[in-house]
Image (cartoon, rainbow, N blue to C red; front, top):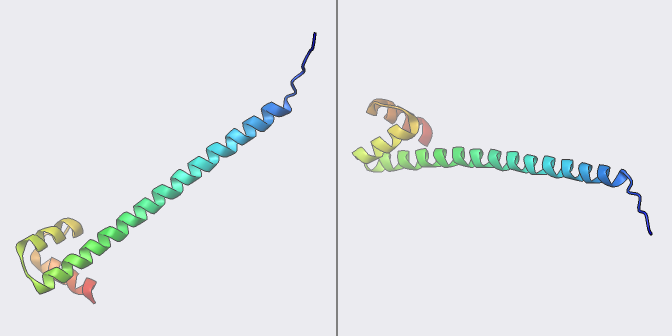
Length: 88
């Protein structure tokens, strides 16, 4: 008959590796969320600049509507002033 004695060192090493694995994945998720938010901001700024350039060439109602939604400005005069600052 053979007896085996398990030491607690194995349990500690497993718990440490699980802890570091969880910390690694949480850190990775936080970094990816931050990158996604920053890419969203960059995309929104690009859309605003693109629509302002289109508006400067072709003054149509759809361009005003898109810019109104993106910039939360309601009047055409405010949108014009905003676009002048963006295009500079």
